[in-house]
Amino acid sequence: MEIQNFFLKKDCVEKTVGEGITRKVLAHHENLMVCELHFQEGSVGVLHTHPHEQCTYIISGKFEFEIGGKKVVLQAGDSTYKQPEILHGAVCLQEGSLIDIFTPEREDFLTD
Image (cartoon, rainbow, N blue to C red; front, side, top):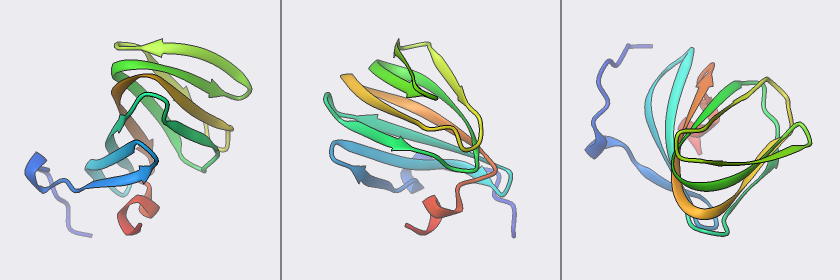
């Protein structure tokens, strides 16, 4: 795989990934991926698991995250860590954006 070092905003495709949720895949390579997501108020990131480690940084808005059965309300400046296979999801309480970081990269995000 050829290594790409620069990812320009104008080239990042925004995809609808749920009702009121859009995602842009930003910088990535086989061991790391960064995505930007935007949620409309009331949007739900359904509970799910995956084999990747994931960190989330809240840019704006307010979200109720559920991770491993525990719910916490987070807002701008807060962040999360999710270990592989842990059940997690979020409800957007106030319109906002977040950054998701995965290791390794989510190949499914590149093909869906």
